Length: 538
Image 1: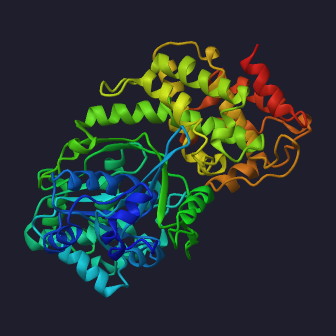
Image 2: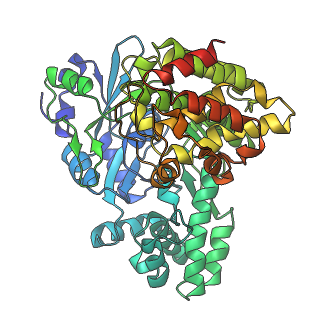
């Protein structure tokens, strides 16, 4: 079997013999139509895009419900375009990992073009300007992670690249948000054409974050005379430029060796993952779970593909917000974060293996069902209990999903305020007794114990990346695992930080409970396990 490329698709029998589905449309005609009149450009060319967003459009193309594809652009890691897209004619091998151990494989061909969104790449930028000045463009969407929208450093100062972009104007924009503002300015000058600018990243109020960042850059340019007031008005008019909110949920872990080996055993070449110059671990294939959810605010001033016919929930902003809050504050993300920090300390490297651990299962069941569901936000379009059932019974235990607690534990300081803090605030708002909470204070104590960089055997562990890691570890310095007497109230400075937890936990009874769990977990080898077990089995 040759390398996956456009020419090899002609040998349909060979691919079908391997149970690999092929695009069910005239791909050449789709590419030609898209290049002539693009309707959708997407920024962020990684796994969630290839394994979810592009696959949605593939379904519409295959069902004859749409005739144009999507243009992929990357604002950060240009090696992805050069080494993963171009050599394979923009095709992706999509491998769905089913809970029963089987896989479903499909070649996704809905990407018509792949570009580097790099102001130093004159040809790529010229093409992006051409795309953005086409009156028929309907969507510019993003999966660049929450960090991609950030303009400021943790100390509140502007990132140097953003400061430079603001000073130098649209022509030299480098940061993703500056680049988008520059492309929207080109669209404004071409005729003030409407467009939906859609964040599909896994973060709260994603459309609001995207809009705020673009507007901040644009306002700075107006102040310096690079753009006129009409451009600000254009961006502010949702009948011209809309920023729909969305909720996305599909686990797409890094490419796994067992998937690569299975593809190689079938004679499919060139599937080995690469590590890019920006340290992205990526392959020509994407492995992902089957469950997927995309809820999008239906606000598209220039029209849109019939996404609802590909399984997307098209709804209003309030429902999007409720669905997102249901997932990130109750039904999935809190469970993931709690089990990841404990999993790291207990020596696990796979989420699915953690689901064989009675103590970890007890932790997430209590967290989801007993502590989260009583105050859950019900979006109406998804049933919260059924969602947790699927997470606990199918998604997390899937032995063929090679996801790691070390990956989930990344950036935990940026997550705990939403994943635990919102439930705490709901308990306070509804007059519920915070003393009823066990799993939430256990999860917070576990995270702080994890930051000591010592596992439950007393051996060093590597703490995942986190923008506050150095600051938090400095506060915790002097506390030693195995020596509870070294704790002298140091947690107070962290628990009182409302920017981390969403409120001052020192003013709640949870403070003492978190401290008790934390100190108990310092007792020596096995103390983390003992504390977890005893707290959940009184």
